Length: 372
Image (cartoon, rainbow, N blue to C red; front, top):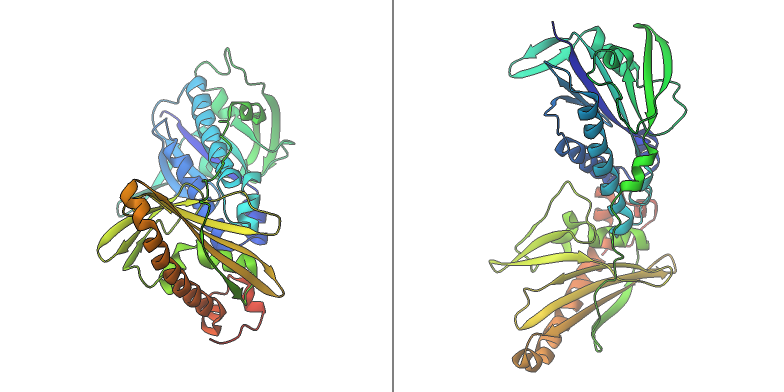
């Protein structure tokens, strides 16, 4: 019987990540990273299971060559770390999860052996000794953080094992309840030199005479930023919108788009940021769907104020043509009134006891917010 490939990419640091950071954002980040790894499946591997911080793949039939396995590892590793760079480059949230995401690491475990299957309705899951072995190998004494570990059972069966390869393998062995297992491992850190170099985000140019509304909100700045930027809360304070369409399983960041439906008309909004002064948090959005305007840019600037926050809502209009320039003062007056309504509703929602009680993920639950 031909041996099957057992292959596990494992995200390192996951336990510490979810234990010491905001759970909601960390769950979204890990889900994104697992999807990135699944999308990078060049070997057409079968996904047996998602195991929290790891993916368990298998492939029946002829084993891949070492070259093919190495390319698979490289594709997943680079896709994973290129995606992680976005959390530093495009993040708008300063919570622990978003700040520390770039520190996550990736390991790979590959093994070969005869496997059996348990079938439950249409679902087929590998089981048996070899499945136990590859999972035991995840607990080892390898002294480096990111590596490819290949069991000797696989390397001895694999075509062109490590021929003409840039990989330098070292030997190791572990004694488990499944027996003594020998393996080869190689450091993947050199692959980081091939990561994409992201361009510096410069933000959008501001108008000379912006629309400005400012006032105090009695919640901490980071909580107010979460209420403003997390689109699942948007319907609570932007009641002019009939519907907000967005990816609910994603953390909002620069470059992400969502759709605001107003009176049946779809307005596409892109999340943006801009350089801000120390101790200020900024969330912005822009759209090209504003009539007669090149674009409309809207910022929420949040800074500490006593035990709460000072919130400034600002808007910038760029006229598309002469008619747009004529209409711009009228639009600005209307937008100022809209901003005042938005500020009032946002303040009422953020300071309400009901909102604090129903959203334990926010730190303001440790305070005593005033009822509105």
